[in-house]
Image (tube, rainbow, N blue to C red; front, side, top):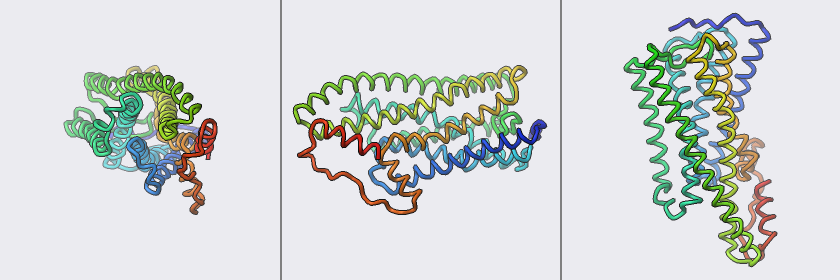
Length: 337
């Protein structure tokens, strides 16, 4: 193992760094646990699209349970004290969550594109069974890649002082360049392009749909179709906010990673530590976004946090008298509950 000692730090710096890491750990574990429990309790949340949300919550929860506590302890003790075996395990879990998150978000964007734009092909490609197969193949492929490069010693996992966590260490510059070409290209740029294309097409389709919705409401026709359309628009808006939060964390994070890895002599320790904190932040904000943008998640979170069952506030499925602006107001009330 490389030098496991962190650089000398003043007490206020130690307290600040450890406090930030512990706070992110608590938020991530609590929030993502709530997401998993909410989907177990409420069958309405176990839709095909929410399957990808659950996958993101599981990967973030892995990071919160394994990587964040060890990083917090390291920042407190000032050195890695957990041995090489746990370093290998933490590095593997941390990197797996690091790589699988953007790929899952890209797959989620493609799912919404097929649902909104290519509706006729959606069930053929993203049926519940096939969605599970897509996710399983995606996760297994990343796990296999990490295992292969580690077992062959092409890339090592070691304690990185400036990151304060165990991560990849590259024996040669060629292996480093090759690895970053794969990870940046396939695990960041490609999902980013898929997301931009998908949400742009969804935006155009949604604008076109608005005229149809307004016409249907005025004519009091196709109320069920209009209600479903409004529901899908809200889900897409939530996922778009999710993607925006991801980009706000990951664009500066990747810029700092490349700076630290390829020009370490010009970067400071805080540069590398910000990479760790931005990654942990991205694993913590998703449940907050669900709570503010999805009424059903919000209600389940409230039930779980209050430790009691809230009285049912589901609007009866009576469609006859819901017309025009009444439907819009009812939908908005349900969303804001």
